[in-house]
Image (cartoon, rainbow, N blue to C red):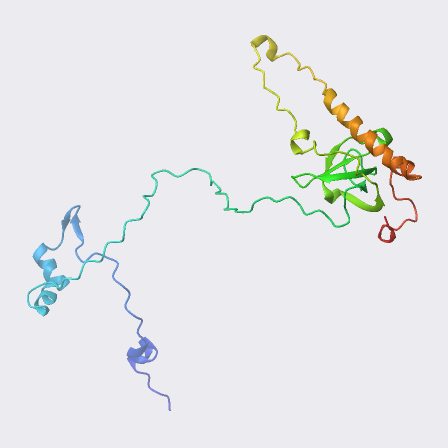
Amino acid sequence: MEKMITSAEAEGGEGVAAMAPKKPRTVSRNPDLIRGIGKYSRSQMYHKKGIWAIKAKNGGVFPRHDPKPKPEAPAEKAPKFYPADDVKKPLVNKHKPKPAKLRASITPGTVLILLAGRFKGKRVVFLKQLPSGLLLVTGPFKINGVPLRRVNQSYVIGTSTKVDISGVNVDKFDDKYFAKEAKKKKTKGEGEFFEAEKEEKNVLPQEKKDDQKTVDTALLKAIESVPDLKSYLGARFSLKAGMKPHELVF
């Protein structure tokens, strides 16, 4: 025998329980008849909204809410305009530069091998460490052409060969001695603007030439007293086929 289906089950599947939830109202309760004039008057809308019921529930007075506390004013007023590009603020750095600690293998009179720069591969004599942490070295100039110059100890190899430099006076030399003089900029006129700039040759002052001779003279006396040391300083260091750098003893 066939089962009878009720009208409620046919329309809603499982009856009233299957009804869809009510959607929130999106249309005004008082539609406009024409622009600016609504369908219902103000008193009619008063009753439709149920404001009278809210007022009656609270003893004829609308419920009042305590005002929200005002946010505290910022200590610094925000600027009216902001930069178009992000400006990076430098980080606070309290680090004070200190001269690098001298390696234990490098002592005054140690023969060093230069690993970088104009004179790389040449052997030089270490004289002293300057206040900046750089090393003061010389060839001497008369043996291998390396003048008095400053070198970073990261780019040298310390050897076991030593030279007695007790007779060499290097008190005069500091970082200011090697500082370059600031060139003054010349203002060009209309006629000089298109002219090519003349390259000025850097001429070494006679005072520095004399200082080099003084250091070389005292240093050569100590070098000549050691056999084969002069030729050792004059020879350039380089790796050859079959030489293993990690097995070399300097």
